[in-house]
Image 1 (cartoon, helix red, strand yellow):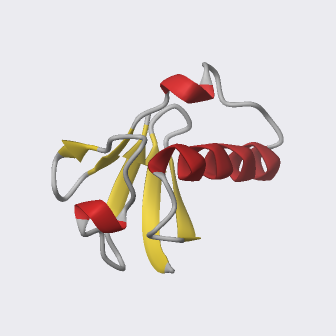
Image 2: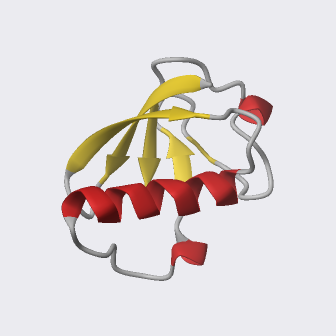
Length: 82
């Protein structure tokens, strides 16, 4: 498990998550989206399958079939979900 901050521009908010670095990015996007919707009591606009997760620090869009470990994401990194 690694601890990261995820910025969601659609809500202009940053969320802190403990994520399994070996899970596929697509799975993490789904889980993060659901948790944010629960916390905010509203749905995120758009098709979750079209969401993209990126690294602010590394300036790279993550392949949904890859994992955070595959991109060497470490504790404290900042990610963005659009």
